[in-house]
Length: 201
Image (cartoon, rainbow, N blue to C red):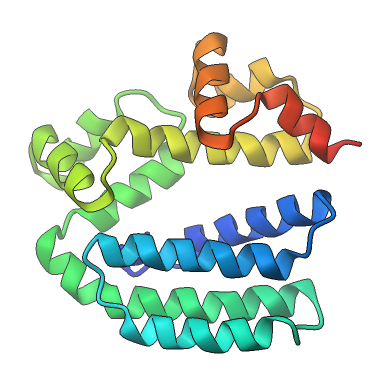
């Protein structure tokens, strides 16, 4: 998302990190500092030219401890993300102008079926072009990127609702409960039940 010049999805991800750190009784500043560093590393590995974002990150590390409120801390973190997004947008769009539209589809219709086919059709490119570009840029195939988005949404629902995991799996587009459990374990390191228990003590 940052490579496409978008901040909304990464900011929501940072909010998830903040909530998880708080629920575990850990200082959110340290978790956010580490997470933003990992995000910037990933963006750089994908070809993003983000020297200015690294400078903003250094300032963020110095200022994070001074943040008075949760919103203040998130705003400071968001400045780093915005800096990375601005630095990457033009360069990335030259490489794959259809990717921002693909992201729109992934983040809004993640629960739908046949997203690759539909995305390719709306972008006017072959599905194989999308899969190649996705893998080249992210190091993950299309299914894995979609799986991560679905599990991120499932984590939010597990934290904020009492809906059963089976219902959440269907809501995020994973029809098979066993597959949901395997994906959740792969991307979070724990089962949906263990994850929820952490937030509902």
